[in-house]
Image 1 (tube, one colour):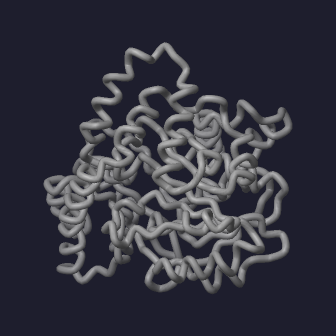
Image 2: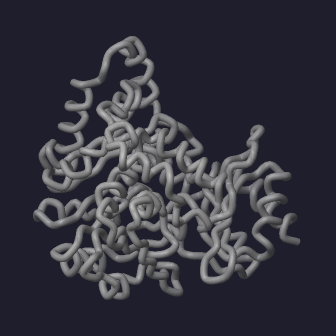
Amino acid sequence: MKNNRREWIKSALRFSLAAPLSATVVQQLMAAPVSGAESSLPHLPAEGGKVRLNFNENPYGPGESARQAVIRTLAEGNRYPFGEIDALKAQLAKKEGVTPEHIHLGAGSGDLLCQAGVAYGLEGGSIISAFPTFPMLMDYAAVFKARWDKVNVNDQLEHDYKAMAAAVKADTKLVFICNPNNPTGTLVDHKVVEAFCDEVSPKVTVYADEAYREFLPPEQQHTLVTQVKKGANVIVSRTFSKIYGLAGLRIGYLIARPDIIRNIAQYAGDIPMSQTAIAAAAACASDESFMKMVRDKNAEARAVLTSYLDQKKMWYGKSHTNFVFFPAPKDGKAILAGMEQKGYLMRIWDFKGKEWCRVSIGTLDQMKGFVKAFDETIS
């Protein structure tokens, strides 16, 4: 646990949360363990050129529009990006159909999840989410003694929205949802999610992580920004780390009512994003041809893995993302070690008393190599 906490503290500093906080809050950040530390097995081995199927990264890298924007912007690397931040907010606001005051930028959606975790965890109470899901917001809230109320996903690995609504209590501060969900890859119909927000958001803030939305076909890319436009107590987070391929540049944004944005933004650093990240995001935000290329290639490569699992009669959650989640056919640590030895990195999650594999989708050739190595490892 000590090593887990040390690594978490490094993460906290890296996301620049500590700088604007009071001495008391910083002391709490440094002193407290993280509640979700056992949700998955260690996943940071020495890489040495191994195929990274453990972080849900885009294997094709940034699109050409983003690459050229970074090159052009390098000459401005000596300047603070004040005007560029405002310009990107305006651009994203126009895209989403809101005002710039509804937009808050951060160094990836992880940075924004951390800020929200502090904003809604400071006074204790509970944070509700499906389980398993991406735990970062709840981990940060737990530092301030907020309680993480976990509602298990259903047998299809989908959010159980009826049970989540029933879990709301007088001291609930926020409900976190992730659609499509990480690590399960599953999607719940947007009408169900909208109805859930209509019921719950008058009582408590709903935070919707839409990091993987762009992997859906365009006609299925529904969003809870519609709730924000109605003035609902809803926060939507987006990232440029996934389909846009900018994970290493670190940029994302929130969409919410201006009063909610101000509450969260007070825990942000002054300038968490670089000139290059802002320029890349501005260039690729509407690069539909690049997103279609990634979406199509991802679906083709994902089918290699799901076809293998079908052939082996191994059940898996229906994936709408760039990863697949399925029960581990043997000991998780043995799978991780065996696959690393063969040159592939992946994740193992612990849920419902058993271990589950989460495999990110690489290129077509990488996935062909993965299924061969995986079959040898579990045989």
